[in-house]
Image (cartoon, rainbow, N blue to C red; front, side):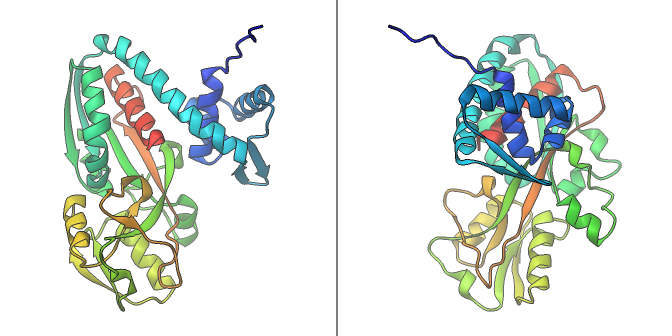
Length: 301
């Protein structure tokens, strides 16, 4: 006897993924334009359908159970296939010109894969891409040049404790996900064992550089900047030559490099927010589709 098929609404899966990636029910509600009770209800309905608890809430903290992690990973794959299928058959009606601003390290990772897929899905959209530091992309007088900006954002809670947000920083409402900032080096060299710690960094203004130097300073760990270059390809080449180590978001680490484990001399660097910012409150259909493409690609990374 064939058992009846049971389906899980795509909306529930998207809600769970958004809650986990954004770090909370309120943040997910903002991203999905729903109230917090509606988000909580959908997660509860998903848990009841599966028969397992997926999330544990304790005060303001949110933890993912082992079952929740398994559902989360599979849900990301299902959502990506769903969105790719939808975009494939709805892309012909999307036209226009878009100017995208993106940090160099994400350009190296996303452009060949996600942007290439977007261009195939929407061949009638003309796309221009500018790569720069997040603070430069979001600076007054420049951000209006872009229809959409993918930018890095520091930990708001930490910045609020230390002082006011910088002018180029943005609200957490724009954050689509958070990623770990990690120490990275060449697998062939042990530059991380040298003292003072040799760093290969982007120029001043880079969030990675600011976080790395701030953490090392607070832990009183000596370091020296041995190489400064603004793009990921240059940083990667310097690391592969054994000149030093650097800090990158986990999702942008090239295959030729390795992530170093935190230690006494390599303290944890925390998380970095990744946000999408439209030129105005009523973005074009093409800009909305590009934002969805970027977000889905980041979630699947």
